[in-house]
Image (cartoon, rainbow, N blue to C red; front, side, top):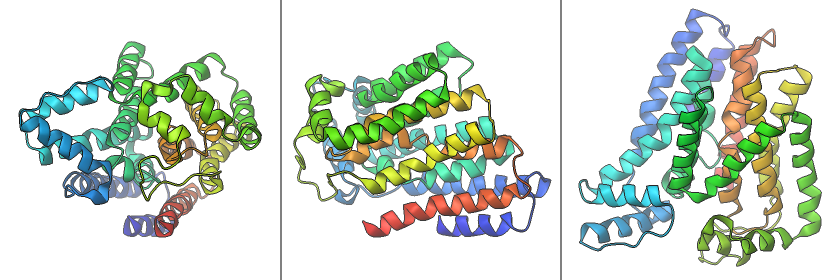
Amino acid sequence: MMVLMLITLFHSYQSDLFTVNTKNFAKILGLFSLFLITFYLGTRPVSYQFGDMLTYSKFYNRIVAGETPIVTKDFLFNYFLIFCAHIIGERIFFFICAVIYIIPCYVFSKKYCGSYWYFVFFIFIGSYMFWPFGTNGIRNGLGTSIFILALCFYNRKVVMYILMAVSFGVHSSLIIPIAAFFVAGVYKNPKVYLYIWAAAIPLSLVGGGFWETLFASIGFGSDSRAVDYLTKGNAYHDHFAYTGFRWDFLFYSSFAVFAGWYFIFKKNITDKFYIHLWGIYMIANAFWILVIRANFSNRFAYLSWFLMAPIIAYPLLRYKMFPNQYRIIGIVLVVYYMFTYFMYLKG
């Protein structure tokens, strides 16, 4: 990824965005990165290093051995897993999951940014938590990717709603971005989204653990693990757990907040889809801010973070806004990816 980033940055200073040369460059690097990340992610070993992947593997192999599981939640994912366990090996299953996780990002990028899809796709796969939710929080990751696929049918409402329902069936936490989608569809004033997001910060600071307890008490997602994440600290004794007010996560979230604010209010972007997309992000991210102290706060944050790539890149690749726009895109990719890299080094 670092090499791709540097190559892209170098090329952005050697060419103009709206040229055949750049389109060919984007196509070559795009296809390379698509196949690279798909096979790298899909052929990883089954290991405890990937967190819940080992849990999925054990569950999968129990079914292969003849056990009949009782499914009580996330029905589509679990029945999909059970179906696969009867016909294919676990390695193929994890590869299929990787394909389902990655392809919607490609489809979205290609649909909305055409020949320049690589730049959006790079931000998708270079995002903080993209890798963990493809290897560890697999159900959550698949749910968000199917939601992204649903957005590709924004003008075909029936198909979009069906895919959103599928995303919820894969992981019930997708109720948050789905609810945000409908709220943002009703209240279409982007200033309202900004006020909601800004208000969530002092409410979280003042409310403390009140919000975690509140959402747990109303049966968030009907998921016992989600309730534990909200109320019981490091309930699963995982060394990745970290609680407290995550200023670093909030700073990262602000990238998309600033991008939307800048493009909508300063550059006067009136694209209805983009404004709606920003609204989904702002509302879902505001929910996370309220429960920011929860154990595994990143799992709640990812319910908005998975939309950061299009929010940041969409206007830059659909509208001419700057004299040296390609260079700005190159710099944006560097800044965005370097945050991911430094957070990786931080551990």
